Image (cartoon, rainbow, N blue to C red; front, side, top):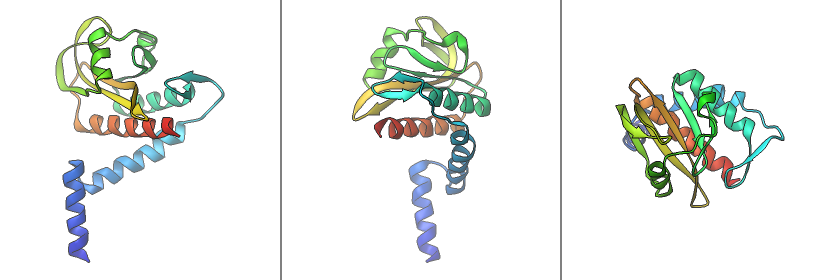
Length: 169
């Protein structure tokens, strides 16, 4: 039985790219600290489907508090919720919209040039489109003047899976 468990753990590590302990830590962190702060009210916004805006704000606020990075959740073409008010309701650049609609994830863990909001800026960034019922409905964008690490990538993946599952219900 021990050999079987060790094989399964190695398979999980190979699939996830991280140890089982790290995955469990991130999952528990997400459940304990992120979901705990999420509250649902009657305030709603359309992202392919009705979704409480407070959920998105809480999600972004919680991740921002832990990661200390700029985080935005977008529709197909504009910012819906942002960790900073200066990005709220900004239109995405045409090149970024095109890549999101093609379901292209974009990432640079070190600062590089990208056009997010019609201005070319030099930041570390992750752009991760999310889908509902096989249709792209928006994206998660994390960016920073400093380098991003693998934990940020994992958190974006968790956020994406959460949104896809939540929106699909």
